[in-house]
Picture 1 (cartoon, one colour):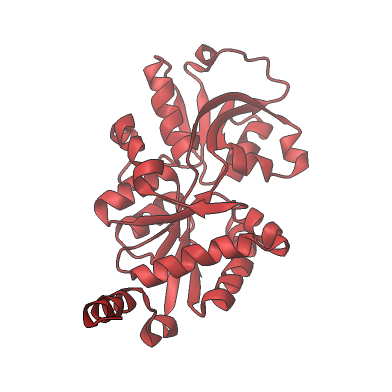
Picture 2 (cartoon, helix red, strand yellow):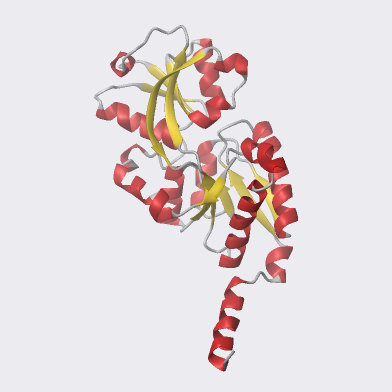
Length: 276
């Protein structure tokens, strides 16, 4: 190998190797609170433990009580890593430069759900009704759904109930006629709740929630974490753990291919920038 080749190999090593300083500090992981704090903790601690074993990095799980609180923290750049919804990624990329690392291979669909015994058939029947949503900026469950209803000339009263689980329960209890959620969270609900619900409307498919990194995280660390997720998925024993965090089959993410087109949906007028 000639001197020029050695020089470029040295440069590449400098940019891709993980330093001792990078492995000795904890990295914060923020998870969008679609579910309860207990459910998120139960789901994410085992997989973060596996990631620590695979990468020798330390991870500190951060669970905030509401989606707006999560947004405030992520958009301020507090999270080293964050599991966020697709439109969160669009905004987080714009304001902080967050880079999507992986997402599940299964597409995300927003759903409108009603009680199974509700005879409603047309979207127009929702006009003037109160609907439950987890938070204003929950992408497929709320943001896209509210924008789509408005563009159909349908006026609704939104009731933001903090989590997807609360949406389902509000519908079952009859507090609202319908509610917004996503296919992934409904499939993870208790059978006793699912059996009382009916999917009334489904949005187009989108690339699902990414696990993203702040650009202050080095390329070497980002690559290590992304590749470790895919290696964990190669072991069938880890399948239940990955399923719990809604990334059963992780694939590498690419902002331009997966999320950039969401910028063209013009959802900013429906995006709530402050806590409701």
